[in-house]
Structures are given as C-alpha cells and as structure tokens.
Amino acid sequence: MHERTLGDVVLEVRNISLSFGAMRVLNDISFDVRQGEIRSIIGPNGAGKSSMLNVINGFYHPQEGTITYRGETRHQMKVHKAAEQGIARTFQNIALFKGMTTLDNIMTGRNLKIKSNMLLQAIYWGKAQKEEIEHRKKVEEIIDFLEIQAIRKTPVGRLPYGMQKRVELGRALAAEPDILLLDEPMAGMNVEEKEDMSRFVLDINDEFGTTIILIEHDMGVVMDLSDRVVVLDYGLQLADGPPDEVRSNQAVIDAYLGVSH
Image (tube, rainbow, N blue to C red; front, side, top):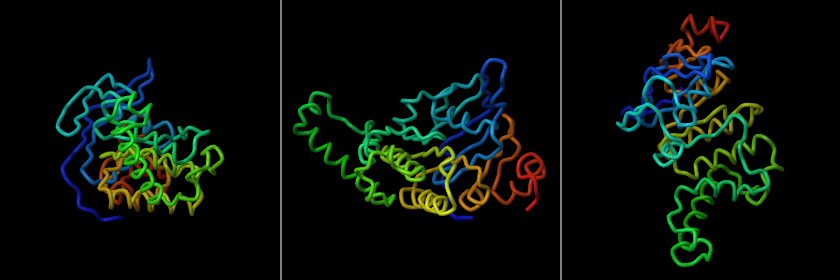
C-alpha cells in the first residue's frame, strides 16, 4: 500500500439514508475522508457506491443524515455548490462531448474558473483574452501531465475507451478540485491501461495534494492505492478501515471477496 501522511477530516457523511420510492439504496452510512487521502468505496454491483458519490456531490439528496464539508454541516449538497467548493467527479459511463477535441473537452472543466463576463468573452478582449490564455496554459499542463499530447486535437469520439477515460480525468482535473470523486475510472480497461491510470491517481494525489474518493472493482488496485476502504453491500455498510483489515474481515469475505486471501 502507498504510504502517505493524512491531514484533518475534510468530509464527513453521517447516517446517510437514501431511498427511491420503496427501494432503500443507502441505509445509515457513516464515514469520513481526511485531507490528502485516497479513500476507496467497494462492494458488489448494486451496493450503492455510485449513489454515495451522487450524495456527496449533490446530485442525489438523502432523506436522512448529514454531510459535513470543511466544517459546514448540511442535510444535502447542491451540485453547483459542490463544484464551487472544489468537489469534482468522473462517471461510470463516460460523459464527454464526443464531437469536441480532447483540448476543448478539458477546457470545459475550466468553466467555473472563468471570471470575465459573457460580452467580454464574446469580443475576446482585454481581461477575457488574458484569462483565456491562462486557462489554455493550465489545460496544456494537464495534457502534458496525463501524457495525451498526441491526441490533443482529436475528437474524443474517435479515441479508444481507455484514452476517453483519461480525457475525462483531465476535464475533472481542470477544475483544480480539492476532492476528486472517481467512479470506476479503470472499468473496462486492460492491465496496461489500469497500471497507467493507477499511476495517474497516485501522481494526482502526490503532486497536487488532491484528496481522492475512489470506486473500483479491481481489488488489487484498491489494496495498492487506498489508505482506507469502506465496504457497502446492498445499501448496508459492512466494514470501514485500512485495506489489510478490510480484506481479512469475515463479513466482507463472505459478501464480496468470496475467498480469504
């Protein structure tokens, strides 16, 4: 496991319950996330992992429980507020603009950072021009960081799946998030692509100090990358702790891992 020094608690979810009609998706879930941590959420399909991320970034509003982010407690987060306060996310199903280039897709991640008004942007003058240059510089840095210079002008719809995932990661990074929510960033990837993505996740954490909440099915990846792991099973919380502790938890073995190893 990757060793790192963790800071104070920055995000705390307490007693979160979420239902859609009669279906209970999350049932009394509680855990916290520390500054600089790679925090994984694992569990079988349908366990409620993506729903938990949707609660954190304000897409879903739980019926019960609270979220405390940087000392402020609320019953629900609003999507735009989460983004403004430095929470960015990627999705299980890639949500890129397929006809736009890699560069332009990543530029859309800068939208929250744009300060000049629409008229100035339209005539591309003065402050807006200076701002545009600064945003492009930041995007080019991300393109270099993710080693995707060769596809910067390629429409993303033409890219292989693994590269599209990398572009989506770039777009999330363009918002310069404090907390990055990664929803199965390695799903559908081959071994080499997973190794690359794992390296980028570690580098984002190391170089930018970004706190990461990761949903991932590959247990090898989870055990290698994570500081702590929370385990969900059909809306219930089975375990929470360091990877080795979670891996040897009998309830987790029975429900999810299937074998003790």
